Length: 283
Image 1: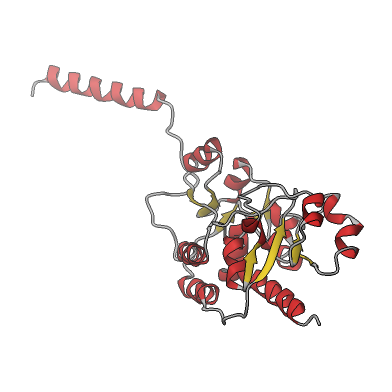
Image 2: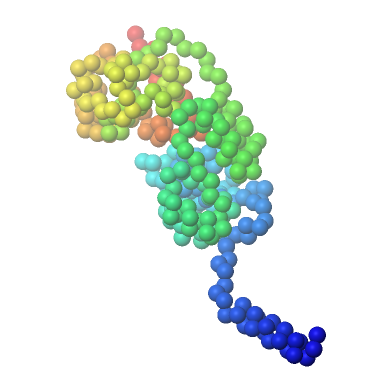
């Protein structure tokens, strides 16, 4: 190559370097996505039901933050003392990104803008729905534990959840009166737990479906054998519920036992077994 060719090549190379120097820098993710997730990734959870699974299968050192719901007695699915051992976030993308987790666990209803912001920052996001059966819940526990690198702990918890339950006697008629004076549908997790523990659905007897309302007047006009009160509406607190119908057993039922699977199933079973024993012990 002659002098002119060498000079031209040098000029082009210099121009390329100058243009590269002036070009805007590509955004750098907070996490290096070219490398695999650690065996025991750090985690932020944005869902109270997933919180309950995480605190059973992973140590606090691995869980950077739970959802803020777990610090609220009205929405938490874990004991207050347990929740206090973990950090929490308000669920904003900014807070989660600042925590720099390897993994974010959330509901399938996570807003798309939030998910997009987390993923642009290089964070792995995994979402889960609400299980509608005991088997689905056991599978969800295994999936969450596997993501946390805690497969053995997840399998142990799933085995307890899916364990066969002892048979019961005659089905006991029961109406679960949820917050808002509504009932659960028959294809829900809590409905399956009621059947498993030997209760017949009074809501089905009445022809009611998911989220149908039952007023105080309806309850008193046609009382079930057992009324599980899980709400705090005026009708659910009315003195007539407790004192008028002696043939109807009334028992409080913690709303936190209704909506989540995972270890919540174990607590719900224990409460339902306690209530059934109380009903059977009546003269």
